[in-house]
Length: 108
Image 1 (cartoon, rainbow, N blue to C red):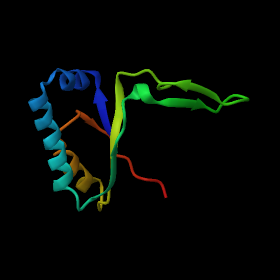
Image 2 (image 1 turned 45 degrees about the horizontal axis):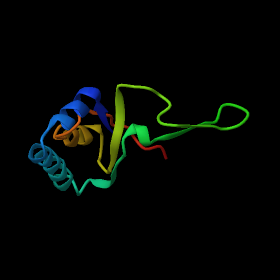
Image 3 (image 1 turned 30 degrees about the vertical axis):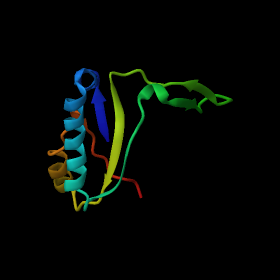
């Protein structure tokens, strides 16, 4: 999971169009470089587009926006098929965008 920090998001917003285009090109190149391991990926819309459904009460409580207010938000994810954590780490070390990546096995 790719996690954007407030600082990263601010730096991305501050880029001019050509600079932002080069940053996106580096990300596209990273996906191309690892396409043999990436089985699925998606970029999520910003956290303010979220709808949260809280299911711990008698009735579902639905609210607009993220439930957790945080300075870091998951901006996307990629599913990779690798032999072990070391191989996943080798791929993640080359990630050119947001400064935080969480690696988590898929259950089942």
